[in-house]
Length: 182
Image (cartoon, rainbow, N blue to C red; front, side):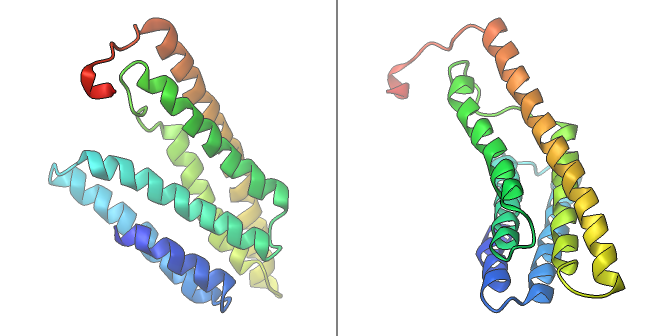
């Protein structure tokens, strides 16, 4: 829940006062709490359905907030700002198809985690690269390297999920509707 509350704060810091250092601190705290939460949940066998839903939602919201912030500040081109959310629209479009077979989501795939990792490293580096000097230039180069790999992996993972849904639809009988479904 703390990670979710940090999303509007992060976006405000990026777009309002353009306090990039504080925005990066919020992003780093979010990343650390994401890791810590997952580590402790697995270690203490406290994995919950709510956590399994909210964790990727928080990741997607941070990615969306960073993309919007970077695009509105002209740090990234608009094609990047459109391409990433477009993949999420594809994923949301698959959910009704999954529900016809009694599923609400597919398990997170390593490729999706790798894509998110790349993107969540790319955005802080691109923010740091929005300046002058050697550090900014290095951050921009590394940021774009992570961003391009992240975009490619993000879409590759999305296509893999779409293929899994297609396979599931072909191999699984439709779920029977009950009175509770109405």
